[in-house]
Image (cartoon, rainbow, N blue to C red; front, side, top):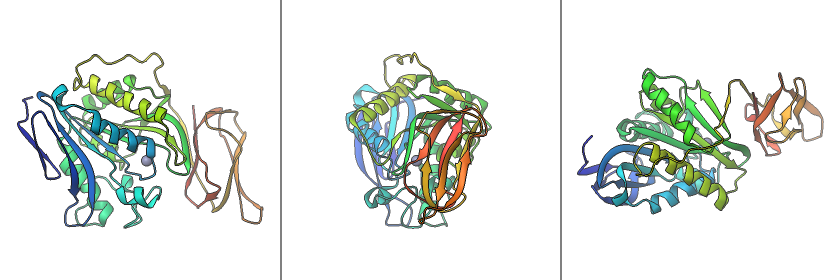
Length: 319
Ligand SMILES: [Zn+2]
């Protein structure tokens, strides 16, 4: 690894020891996302952080905005690239899940397609111009506007480079997450990066369209600890006393019908095998569907909106 005299991300050309902010244009479109490019004064790894692939996940977006301002290029070894947020049109429209321009969930489009719609192009640019130049990739999320979840970390389970997978899993020990899950998905931004051999993690925190100073501070502390783990920040990483609980088995329930969603459990509640966890009724109050836990489990994620559409996620439980 050598000191990088200049780096170029999204047209921002940044010399060693400097930081620049601006907007990066996506291929031939009018779409521009905000980013901060920090080139350290010493040699080191390149960390990519993407926030707000879903535009209503506020704690991660605010954490990314604050970190981008706080990090001093003179004090880091390596490079930090922060996008805050990726899905800026959903952010301003206050729309969950999707990119308003094409109605697609960007996180299902990786590694992207330069000939596709805007979402495909954004995924393609993030893959080729950002992920492929990174030594480590953090994709930060949260519960969306109508979702709620405890602090989580997902680490990839699929990828040819076993060392990269092991390195990402090792990094989970430096996060203040309550739960960690090994993911077997392939199209998520961090899954796609892992498949190509880049150590990557997805972190989640908060939800319900809210954000607090405390959540943002916790998020920033987690990310700074990963920076210490990567030796981008000089201090030794803070050891976390309560390591995340590994979830080995999880059920992701989707709504089988549209209607009104009535969960009858709380987040992180322990439920028994066969216990009812929620139901969907129509707008006249008639029960359309009931949902039960298949085994003794903990409620790990839930949708909090009354309105529910068929195939939307409603609850995740696991052990
Ligand atoms: Zn998300």
